[in-house]
Image 1 (cartoon, rainbow, N blue to C red):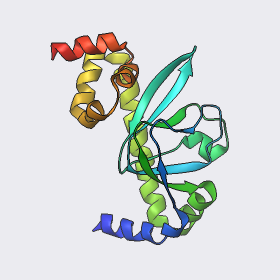
Image 2: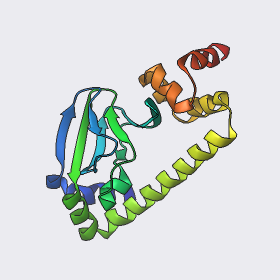
Image 3: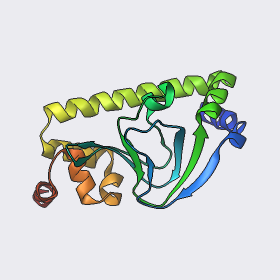
Image 4: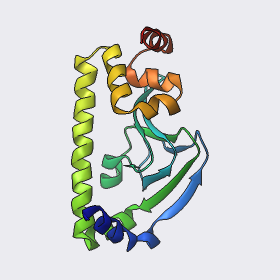
Length: 178
């Protein structure tokens, strides 16, 4: 019931969204730019990455039904700490900053849902952070296999290896041992 109510509430603001069909390998936001949009994924896979000493590091993936932006950049007009890129052809519904705040101000129900989603994302990032410290690459691979198996089916191996903090060769060895 609550989910239907929330969907109906979002429906009131459909006119503020822009539907975009984006090709694969399109950079939506470059590291260092200021985020101007929030992306809601209808179809496709997006990755978040940053550059460290000339090396491209992937640290998160987003799929259908999820929303993504460089939150700190979007909220405070700061340079983004990372890039957002489509890995597959994507259908995205985007909101500008003005539209986002218009919705948040007008709808306590959506504001509450977004606060909960933000908390859930924070908890996910905490677990990811701790996993990178505590667990071996093989344990991180197992976690990914258990929690997000669709990532392993849809994302190129070199991005998965980068996400796990290992080389593609090491990832192949881990996969072969399974």
